Amino acid sequence: MKHHINKYPVFLLLLSVICFGSCKKYLDEKDNSNFVKTNYFTSGSQAQTFVNGIYTSLYLFQNGDAYGESPFITIELFAGHTTSLGQSVNNSNVINQRTDAVNPGFEDVWQNSYVGISNANLALQQIPAISMDETLKKKLLGETHFLRAFFYYHLVRLYGDVPLITEPVTVNSATLYPERSAAASVYDLIISDLQAAQTSGLPAADQTGRVSLGAVNTLLASVYLTTAGYPMQKTENYAKAAATAALVLPSYTLFDKYDYLHDNAHKNQGELIFQNQYLVGVRTNAISQLTLPFNLPVGAYGDHYGAMVPTNAFFNSYEANDLRAQERQFYFSSYPQYGDPSKTVVFGVHALYKYFHVESALGNGICDENWTFLRLPEAMLIYAEATNEVNGPTDAAYTQINLIRARAKLPPLAGLSKDQFRTAIWKERYHELAYENKAYFDIQRTHQIYNVLNNTFGDATTTANEQGVTMKAQYYLWPVPQREINTNNKLKQNPGW
Image 1 (cartoon, rainbow, N blue to C red):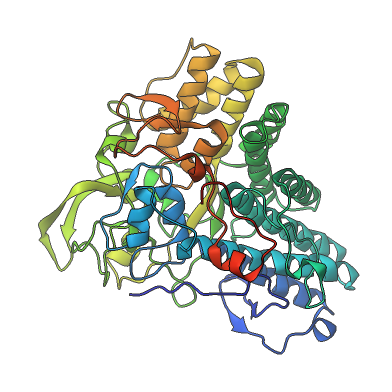
Image 2 (tube, rainbow, N blue to C red):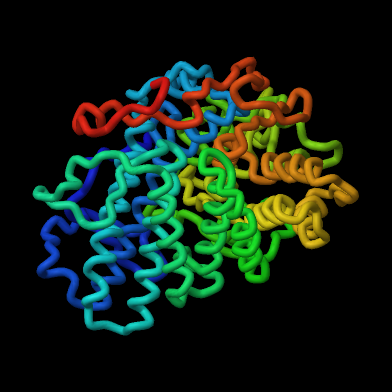
């Protein structure tokens, strides 16, 4: 099964994909090449359909190809705790710190993020003038503000200063060939968008896959936590991060089984705050295939890419008796052979069971597992970390981290200093949110890496990881894709690239 990544212009002038459906939400695609603004934005149903279309840009993060390359994997490789057993030269180059600005993954994320942004800009311009139900209008605008913030949040963390486009672009626009804007300005827009979404009447939680108030507040809390660290260092935002994360906690509950993180029955429920939606017959993915060991007969998949495999050293960094490190919890090292379950396939590595999709593995190999962008433990750990930075370890902060540890069958933390508690939270983020595209962004904002061999944290650019690679300072950011620079001479490259 081969998964292709689509190419788009840097800034789309018009939307080319419109989505329909109720339960399917933004899953269903339809070519709408006759779309023009003058004949489209005239009704509430058109506004709903257009916003559904913006959601489709979220798929860029799980797009993949036959070599095992995908943005969600590239982001994880930068954190240094992942091996790639497959055949991707680009993945190997990232792991060994020898990639460059022509890596297609950098281009895909840049271009496709701006597809979503350009469509969000058009929606924010056109929907306010539509005569339609005002409650629905506010909700759709809130979803759009969130989605634009979501794309910009990834862009500014990955590339630093990026073009800040807030209006639809035409061939005559000054922003057709834009300069990069300061990261501080991009963060200002992200925060403004999320604050607008907070007051748009979104539900506290949503089990259909759409943006909820919980998603808005979790993302905003993450933004505040990020901007309190490097490179912004606005430490006053720790208090804002804690207060915003606290708003999320009452609306969600932790699962009592880790299996529910990656099965079909529990999509968009429990602790799952915001997911990318997949459905057999409409939109599928290769998440399981990409994260299984290379070329082993596990499940009904045509290919097993081995593109994202945890290092043994990272796996061994879990505390003794941590449930998450036990077989078929977050990881697994063997499985019945597909076609002959009387035999057991032994991997030789610890693969990611948290992304193993049993339904497709035992079925026809077509995976519609949802990808989780935001879940409750992240909000809980943001609250604990930010609270600690403001007030030191509080009972409320201990409560949040200890709930996560209790589920993992670990003893509660107590009696720690502020510095010790900070380190404990960072470790918990690595272990609970493992391989969910959080670790690289934690390295960026803390300038520390988790030295799993010594169970300590060290300076990111002087501490070798378990693979013997020391992060280059340039790797705090991705390069601006070379193709973008070749097209637009106003764009300047990031340092070191």
